[in-house]
Length: 111
Image (tube, one colour):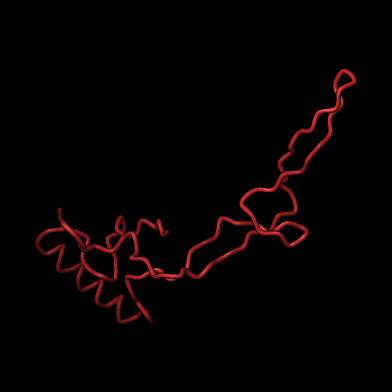
C-alpha cells in the first residue's frame, strides 16, 4: 500500500520532514505551496495495485497451474505445471475502506 519514499526528498504535502530550525520552516513553506497546487490532497489511500491476474478463460487468481500427465517407467504420474504466459494483471482496485498513507507524518497512537 504505497511505498514511494517521498519523505526522502523532503517534500511532502501533509507536513515537514522532521528537520529542525529554518530548514523545517522552508520545508513547511514548500509543502504549503505544493499543497495549493495539488487537487484532492488527502492522507488516505483509496486504491491499490492488485496482485491478481486474469487467464485466457477470464478466471481471476494469484497463480494458475495446468495438470500434466507424465509417463515414467511405464507409470503415469500427474504433475502441476505453473502457467506464466498469457496472463493479464487485474490493475488498480478500489479499497473497501480507505487506509492511511504510509508516509503520513503523524503519530496515531502511542502505547
